Amino acid sequence: MEAAASLPQWRANLATIAALMARAKNELLRVPGAAIPGVLAPTIFFLGINGVFGALTQLRGFDTGAYESFVVPVSMLQGAGFTGAAAGVNLARDMEQGWVDRLLVSPAPRWVLLAGTVLAASARALIPATFVLAIALLLGASWPGVAGLLIAYVMVAAIAAVAACWGSALALRFKSQSAAPLMQAGMMAAIFTTTAYAPLALLQPWMRSVAEVNPVTQVMDAARQGFLGAVTWAETWPAILVLLALVAVLGAWALREMRRTAA
Amino acid sequence: MSTNLRVIRALGMRSIRQTFRRPQLMAPILVFPTLLLAVQTGGAGGAVDLPGFPPVQGFLQFMLAGAMMQSLMLAGNSGGIAFAVDIEMGFTDRLFAAPVPRYTIVLGRLAGVAALGFLSAVWFFAIGLAFGAEVHSGVAGVLIAVFLVTATATAVGGIGAAVALRTGSASVVQGLFPLVLVVLFLSSAFFPIDLMIQPARAIAEYNPFSFIVEGVRTPIIAEVDATDLLEALLAIAGIVVLGLVLSARALRHRLRTG
Image (cartoon, rainbow over all chains, first blue to last red; front, side, top):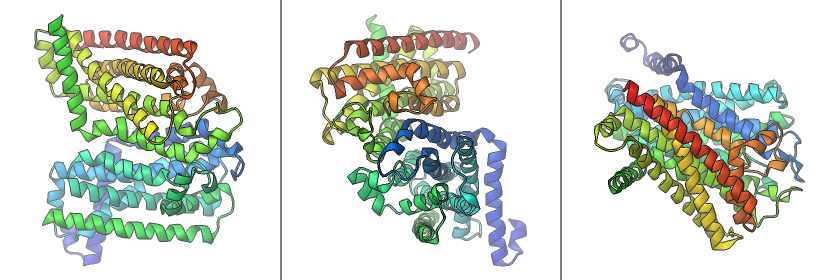
């Protein structure tokens, strides 16, 4: 931080973000067991949903015969959602322990502090996503192609960023790890009230109505496209737009809560 | 005897209050299973049209037993976590030093878990009825299902208590959470066994929790079936025995090693 003080502002900001990301990485390296639940939960969900609901592909109108290909992006995004929400839980823990207070009296801009948390979550989300993807490919999921894979990973990183903004805003609002269920349940609801289990046409009417207005449905469809067929720009750009909007709105909320906390 | 019952009741009440005061303990019991019930019913509800799916009024009716199972297993896990926190904080050591039989300390915790199991059964019946699901065998079916869910919660709580006593670590008991998911997915909690994909199907056929799920589900979707009920009771008895043996051994170990 001291070295950062003598740098131009933008480089100092980057150095602060890098330091916060390095702290998150150190947490991962020093307590490797802490990452296990985040990796295990989406993997178990993938294996479970695939084994239990695999017969859904026999329904008329299901556009693929391979349920593992259909469901792998769900588990990748679920892992990202959990990882992002966990960033909020960690922030709440840091608040309880007084570490955030010390950050807030530093000369770093508020958005830089938030960016460190959010970008660390985005990077960390690639671990469960890669693990689930490897298991899925071993079980026979379709190879999504380079473009499909790239898009799926971008969606994973961006959903983790959305979840981290959501979790951070709640952590800053409630200042307690007791808010953890709200962080996780919010992301779970956002990811599963989409075309997670079946195509839109096969969802129950109420779920179809929710999925149609749920912006995460666009993200799910974009992440899934490479696993089910060709990658198209028409299926990709709505997801990018949705993710930018979600990060902007939830990021602004988190920043507002951070300013309130500091005040 | 009445003193022991008072101790069990007091510790049971404490356990329930502890759960309600901490959202981290309450959410897995009611919030997550309710959310999963909603998304699975809405997302996979078309499954009732699959050939071989048992005749049901709707997927919600079929799924109620699965949601109750998930909730009671997480109640048992949450009970184990709270027990381990008590051990970590030294509260259990103070109870050990008190002039009460040691088994009442474990039974008090299990009484709390049983109450949460009962609450979970009532909660999911209320949700099911509110959203139009019918209980085919009527009040008798509700009573049987509530009894089975409460008994299973107590049995699962015994295993959670045993792990808590053995390890004395809340994070180890919390680490059982993924195992709960595995056991659930590898049972008939969420789908008929005949429609599951191998190897999940083969494992589910022998999973004792499948027998309990069927015991809870049958009175909801059909008439009460004596065979299903007996199999569920036997499965619960097996888990109770396992929990008792593990708890007794873990208690002895803790008292010996401190």
